[in-house]
Length: 173
Image (cartoon, rainbow, N blue to C red):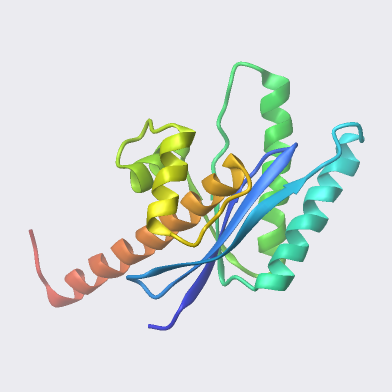
């Protein structure tokens, strides 16, 4: 298996984090990370366009093969949840238009994959991302979360391939 480039995306209307890693199935390599921001004083349509343009530039420059996106976290504020959903739609549309396979992960699954527990906080996630990707210097918690999402996808792909090999070998637990 060759190297696979994965982009993780942590959607948000104010700031959408992104992180790109390379993996060969065992090793993880940091490529780049950052955030795409929108102008809080702009209209919703204008802000979504800013996210679209920013993510499109990242994909064009870094050419990932697959995308992983965090599922929407539903909170008590219905308006905020709806706006987050719209930003998440943009975060899914951009890689879909680029022809990428898109995987979705629940926030607790990302935390469990990277921190080892489903309720890790932002500080723990950032620390573990730094351990797993020593060259990474995320500019925000959103970029660190995006790297964690990409790492989760890399781990999930490895696990899926292992399960397939076990099934082909006829090994049963």
